[in-house]
Length: 229
Image 1 (tube, rainbow, N blue to C red):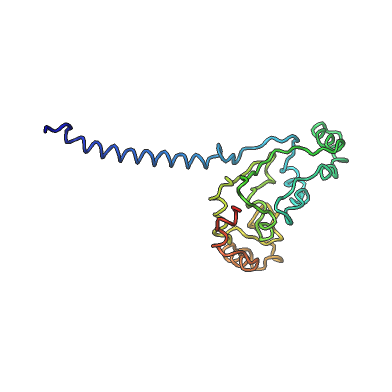
Image 2: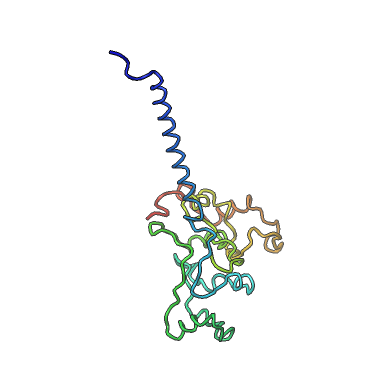
């Protein structure tokens, strides 16, 4: 029986399989990289809010502690959004007639909460507890970034699993003293010698705090059931 195909057909067939596999890998790689971009994660994308609230002004300029507004961050799973009463503690006197704050005053008069736009929004299948993290020495700026420099709020991290695992695998690189969780700049450029007689060395002090705060072993920290319950 005469040969139907030229011998080069075998080479072309093998080559097409190799090219197909490479293209599939390239497409998969591009999709994975695209999933990490701000287009998907919305990192560094400022969110408009119903009130022109500036963390830069309140935290950076006025020095208001995070826990003044987010009162439950140390005791519950959620940090808690401040009720309108918290705003009115100051703004019943300061800028009391500002048109920008009419929504706040209206909320106070009608006893109706302000509908803030959520910035850090984890999927429903992820369990996250603020109190566990801050009571183990994870600072606010570690996850939320320098909010004292943000006129409008945005997330600086992807909030994806690989980002969480970076800390869960090596907590000693991120842990700080519990008394310093609301410090925006960490590690300190010039540590107070009264608080840190030997200065601050994350490579030395981080592992020490991991032991002192009894942080779970790494096999527990990266277990699926830790975050997916």
